[in-house]
Length: 599
Image 1: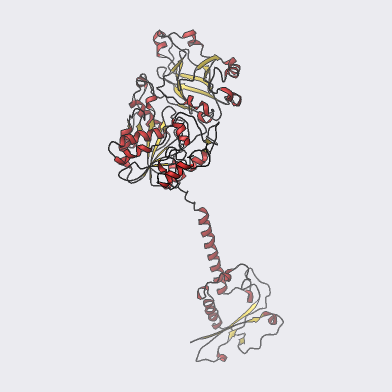
Image 2: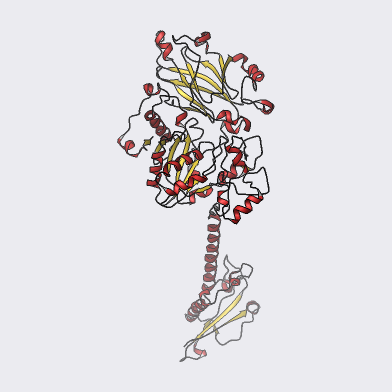
């Protein structure tokens, strides 16, 4: 058994020329000290000691920061101390190198400790970085909190005008009998009787009235969706297809499967071919690069297409919860009501859920929180979610009292300008005078006609209450300042003083290749659209002098800030839609992967 002796000698005496009087110091080189140093480094290994945080503290001096002499002696039982010489370290060079020289040079044990300390420090840094990068999972809204079944707002008894208000006595009685889930708040009762009560403010909210929650706060209530096991049913309003599409829906839905449901097709003009319409919707969805399972054309009022959606949900649900998602006022609550009605014919759970269905209202922002509905006998929940409020829609610009004007209640009819008689001649001889004219669509849109064909006509699809007025472009500014709030509405009443006017101006040069087909649609977010037809059929039948087959239409569109303007392929509506609509030839791969439409 080897005995190891080690000690530290002060280098001060060595530098003064007084070597230690030890018979074992000798100038003769030996291999034994090297072996002794290696043995020492193995003993000094941090793995041989219990872990001590102070050992690696940066506050402690380094082991080789001062000159010191380490003496090691290895002895064997068969040899005495006299036979075990130890080499004498040369301290003649007092100039240290980068890591020290001579007695100050780090030993293999020092190097091991330094390396081990660096590795441990790197591990700690890496661990801290992982904690910073790790995102916290958004908190899911607790369904244990009692909420109004009509709007999803938490029930409260303190603020009379706030959403979720319930009389204190009613609240206590319902709580005693465990019936809080069957309570309808005071705001929902007013909404159900036609009152226009907004509650959403902020960017994308609505001016006027009290604002109890911001659009961003409502969006935050949907942030947990991407972490749930969910099937998403996304709703889009066909009258405001581009404005309500939610192009960045994946930011909310994550990678969950999506069923696209187009609502309010009962508002389209009579004679609309749903095959042409379905193909147009699929083409538009594909161009927006949104992958969906299928497309459904529906009407919550006439129940058209609802059966197909119910079957698709049952087929694709697979134990997941179903979330109804969409922009504000696209008809989510009305869709859920229609869905429960059809599902209730075969599913007793859905039939029972109809008693406490979400409230329906023309006010954007009716739903203020997730509403859980037990709608499936096979398990899983159905959720009505708050609408996503978009700042670029007209509803975010006008006053809350003018909102009903923007919501069509009955089938829309195209308003043609210039107005034409049956024989193709324009009333007031306006067909040849479009160039240099400005058209006002209520007080919300102005269109300056700079260059079009003499036979060109515009067809407006939107709320019936918005009238069209025309004036010379040179007089348009003065006309608008004088008539806004009177002849040009909305805005109306006292709110005209706060109206900032039509601040967004966009110049459009629209190319067309066939005068017999509409050139394009210009959609106004949150309002509707107007179509440009280079050559009216009525005019072309009576005047065949025009031989132009392609060209350019030049117009300028004015809208309030920050309303968006979309230029898109014409939507095939009305009886004439199927005459000029052209189906695109698909490749074999596109035919397999392209989503199918149903109605």
